[in-house]
Image 1 (cartoon, one colour):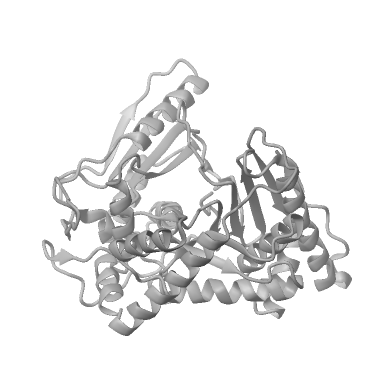
Image 2 (cartoon, one colour):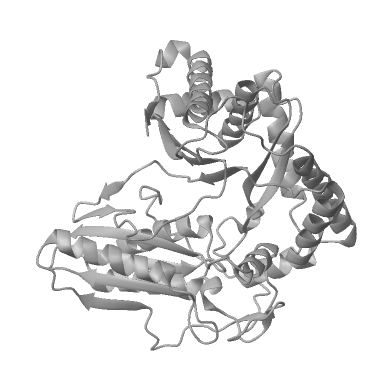
Length: 468
């Protein structure tokens, strides 16, 4: 869920020297390259990133439209164009907004009730989400502002994943509402932002042949590990229906746990993944665990660059059932090592996977997957600004089935004051009791570690809230 509580004061934008001129070819990031290749594969559908805000109250429409346009204007990833038929080796370039170019589609909705209006907004967002993008002249986004009377609006935004990832999702939510409030106060908003085109060029130019060879060797080793140690349903575990488990660590537990992680030189998400691996190994008797994890390759200087830098990579943990703290430390090192070896082209990764399957007689499976997201601000489903109540993720997709092909899928969202954990299981390779036991172990470890970190100031922490 986007951060709706971050500092609303606008910071001056600073253009990045060396931003390519309009029409200059821009290299695809390694992550764009992989994503574009996947979208061209048989059976693979496109993927879009969506946001939907319910806005109740006295909305200044002009200020919101100005804020949205300012976001689109200063982030050059949203100016990227590809040819109508990108082909196997696409080239992209920037085409800045025209002075009179419309960014937001505004419309009045004559719904009979707020509920009908919400259903219409969900249906429209769903349609945008599943509509394939037409390359060529079409912009890689669709943004709509729907109005149902003076006090009810819906802001819907859909972005092509080729130019938008989870970090960009967060930046849109933060910057648009930050700028809206600044404009309402009569203050200027940033005109410039760090350039995605420049960041993509730096990423490609900064990869040396020696680095690529080391990355190839590292991926080859990790893929071979996955092929040698495929996921097997534990003996005696029955197959059944899949499902989802969810848990939430409250503010006191999260803050104390983060303090304990810092003492161990671990990030909170690193600790969580390590605890998940240890629990999975302990519950199944496996000494080795292979999985895939999401990875954001942005360097610190490009933290606020909107664009596509998100991909996935294999992670291989040996002695996964040993001491829990040792396993967490090992996972931290593996995550950092994987980040260091992310810069491979789609063709190189596909060649490595074909090589692995030919050598070991089995593919490098993606049975266990971890998705990690981190937000700077506090968790908030909605935010009251006085004149407005803004609710994020207000419009669920309708009549769209999302298939998860993993046996076990861990989703973690870290906020300053909250940790949200979702655990999906397919029922065939991982049953409900195993998934529940693994999640319970992670939660028990979190509570124990948090209690030990600050027993004199916080007391015992409440048990994490869970639901199915």
